[in-house]
Length: 481
Ligand code: GLU
Image (tube, rainbow, N blue to C red; front, side, top):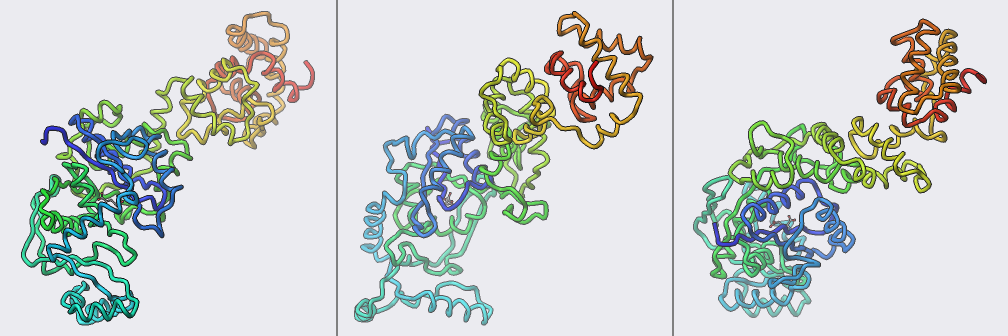
């Protein structure tokens, strides 16, 4: 292990943060925190047509929301900045000159159409599609002609023959042949650096010691190693982790359902739960343990345990974990986190007694799987949202029920007990006076007080509703007592 490992997360701001990328960020972050190293955030925004500032803003928000704090990056400048590739163009230009001077690159004037033609011809003749080096040996004269015709060149790297190897921390020894790879573009005809070129320069200049990323980048690593060799830079250590898959074992994508951090946040998944789940996926920390705090995850993290095979995303398990985190969240904190979801569900909470509302949340939090469900759990306590379900109405229709409710209400009207004692006292009274007990007593009461046939413990519901709140529910069902 290098003295102070430096890792990076290098997203392209071209869409919402995918959970697969969030997992890559998490692995890098845990690695840095576990080894006491640095976690760098670099924005790879050289694809101008697909990058947008709004995506970048979202990205930083999502990472912050997840608690993945970076040591260097946007809004946290360090010695290796700037951390946005679009602000490093002069650096790439200098490095292109360096390769030009060493005769390791050449300008390519092929158009998209010509390249596509070549590709199709190779596929037809059952050969691997790759660039066959058409512009590699143009004479200076030919180049001048192309330029005069108004063609803007891209720059291609002269891929050397021979084999290249590297030891991947997760996948072991990797080897590839230069002959199988066509000369690839390092600078586009619009002057922007291609991903493989910029990434090598940045990882080198930023002192990155370990590159931890998804296995979909393995073929890029081959090209990047060639560039490291061309520049005379020592390559970092690579670790390519498996990808997140859908249930059909295809790479997790939109057609499988929710896939972005933003979607899960909007559903009311807690960041701790999502972090825990992503950390768990395909790289179990310690046998049998599934609920781990940030600190425990950092301590237990090891790349050696990251599995080579893809990990299947199981939304049910994420919800299961989320319910545990909600249950364990201190009520006051939970109320704060629930605020936007409660407002979204149409509740006005400004005028509420905070102590009373904490009681409400305390009562229903064990039943929540996501924060967004909150509206349909607290409605029983709000007169303007309260409604009697068809199932509850069926129970309340029975003639015998009226007597139970009436007797219960009668006690509330007249009993002088303190609020904690009034419920058991009223129940006792109803039992004695009507002879009704068990389900026949509690179901009508539940149906009347909550409008439902399931829900939190009735005595606690009663405490939150209070004597008057309960009477308000009972009276329309029985007429005046
Ligand atoms: N910008 C690349 C991506 O988002 C980074 C890949 C890498 O980690 O090198 O896929």
